[in-house]
Length: 172
Image 1 (cartoon, rainbow, N blue to C red):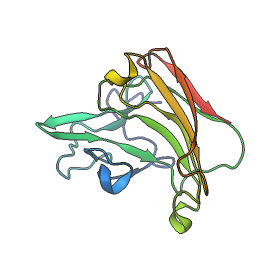
Image 2 (cartoon, one colour):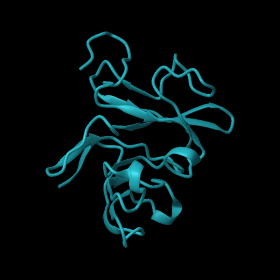
Image 3 (cartoon, rainbow, N blue to C red):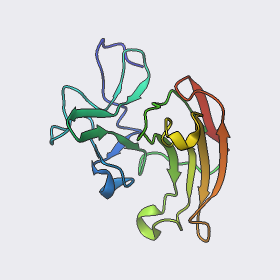
Image 4 (cartoon, helix red, strand yellow):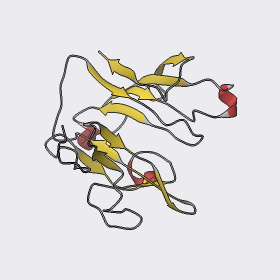
């Protein structure tokens, strides 16, 4: 909830951040991940990449503050929230431009001690390159299970819809 009339910080009891270049943090992308309130260039306090809007939704925004410079946010619940059994889901609208790779995924609590893929990874949703000509103009998302002996993953794919519309993505 956000009744302040302006953008607010995502709940620090639930969310923390991976920060820095994508190659050092979460993927091999060209973006720089910014935390709420960071003024480390190219991040901007005035234009955060993650915030709770006055609509009450969590926004994670990709930016292009200057030529060849890209910013985004990588929120994580590491050390703040975990569960063993149940269902996790999120209702999302996704960006579709070529080059985007929004994802919603989970790592095991023991990631810091045993690493990947032994800790396990559940990709609830990855939407890779929505306008990639190789996709023949169709949106698709993929869920993948990774672990010891399955680092390449076991994949599940859904296609034929607009990821720019609201959809609920989940995993049991």
